[in-house]
Image (cartoon, rainbow, N blue to C red; front, side, top):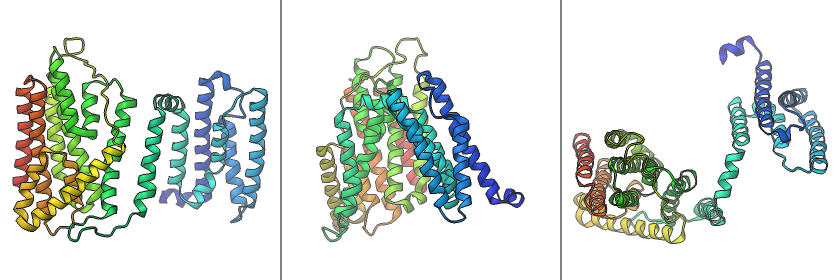
Amino acid sequence: MESITNIFSTDIINFAVVALMSLVIGLSQRKLYEKNSDILHTFGSDRTFTLIGILGYVLYVMGNGSLTPFLYGGATLSLLLSIAYAHKLFIRQRTGITSIMIALITYCIAPIIYVSSITLAILVVVTVLVLAEMKDKFTEFTKKMNDEEFINLAKFLIIAGVILPILPNNELIEGTGLTPYTIWLATVVISGISYISYLVKKYLFPNGGVIITGILGGIYSSTATCIILSKKAKDHSGDLKEYIAAIFCAITMMYFKIFILLGIFNYNLMLKYWYLFAIMIVVSAVVAYFFYRQKPKAGENGSDTKIEEEEEKNPLEFKVAILFAILFIAFTLVTTYALVYFGDSGLRILSIIVGVTDINPFIINLFQTQHNVSDALLILATFQAIISNNVVKMLYGIFFSGKKLLKDLCIGFGVICAFNILLLIIAL
């Protein structure tokens, strides 16, 4: 960029950028018009949008620090667009102001570049292009969502954006690090991650295959996914390799989810031990791929299996959130007293025991910990809880599949647990 500015002035470069961005927006609009022949008669397309962007540039530069010419030009443009919209509304009896809004945004590209940066302008243009192109997909998506989902989303925005910031960060019980803010933050983060997975699975892949179920379910709840897939495998008469692969896809996503949680709650610890999670993600993915390669080819018996949609609890339901908050408080208290009365060995033993339950509250508690323990001990306790939980998942899988998955689950989980233990011995 410096070599370019040595040849051309900043104004010339900005003009070229504005003209190019406006042209790209115009071309995207023309594509939409040609795709929908019934709206061909509009106020303009590629050349019009390009000229609107150039007009905004010229008037902004002419102001020489004053916004008066630019504002007058904007008012004039708004008047012309209003006339075009009135014709569309009363003569053609059609609604919708998307193109008008895009035209006004195009007019504002020049000020964005001068006041902020070209990077922000590019981000604005990209966003406009994506929103314009995905109109049909957004429409289909909103049709699938029921009213309750929008209410749940509104609740999440309230508890995350309104309630969370105003909660006090004063310790409730001395020495535990428990505050209203940390409790609610943990609940909001884990509910948010699970909710995204829940929405993707329910609305984007409602009838997704076994592998999709494993991947998305692993983010939502790897334990629940393992149980669901094992039950389905029990009733399946064909080859079961795809079910095994999906279970280990869920395990892979579990490691990835915990890595994300570590980055959110303890960024420095994540930077220090990220490679441990990276290795386990790769190992789990390789195990999943190993079993996936053994499944029958397309068209053969047992392949391309579909999973019927399961009725899952919405992670934003009040009962689910409260249950997680209670577990988080309980694990925090138990961890504190285990360290006080039994020291480091107490935390090691506790991390193995909690594997039979939901490990997310315990792990988030470790990542947020105010206890005087080493980073190595925190990571050790985290992975011990994961290993213990993996053993429990293996037992669940064997039981709910009627022992049909016994051999493959033992091999897969055995490899993952062995690598995990070996990694801890070497690294810690």
